[in-house]
Length: 273
Image (cartoon, rainbow, N blue to C red):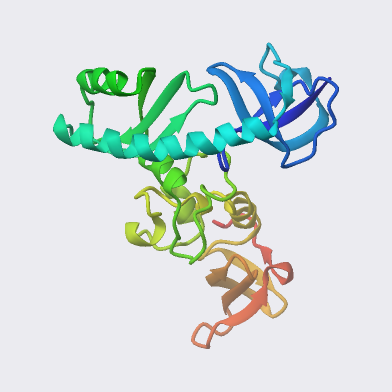
């Protein structure tokens, strides 16, 4: 076990572990740490706690210091530089006639590098663009091609539910989402209804998937033979969330189906269910 503190460098970004170096940090504190790409200033997202050695990526780097007023001023200045760099880069992209869309610009804390994030339909030869940008900013330039889900996370927006995107508000990372999840939740398979603004399947399909898998396991399927308090019958409709079943009783096949809760029926063995 080791004592760590979790630091985040982007809004709703991934949380990285650091050695607090004896500091008792609170959530929201700004700190300066050494990362793989240099010195960075980030926000404490997880207060001091003990975690297993297996969950730590070695070597565990130590906290350099709490962020000072000068550090925070530098972060604010970098945000202004990023806006200027965004405009310049867009003009350069147009001048080079490149098929790419600039999404975001990020200065490292020590200004040793500028990262430009972009989307494109395919591979882009941006070597001349990098040279052009390096001549303007006089520092290391890195262009990173990202996917549409990352673009949505960076830009933010409102989903079809009317709430801000999950990816830009609380999801630290993306998890695989499949069309099978939509089928198991009995949702419309219309791509328009189950896709997010990014054009990919909505992340929220993943949230309740495990619950639906459990409900499907415990709930008789449509056409399954069941025994009810009123006798044997066949399930003609099911509601996984409410647990209600409509059952057509064998003794009254022409009557309207009777409604039972899943707790009040049992599967008939040796029958398809």
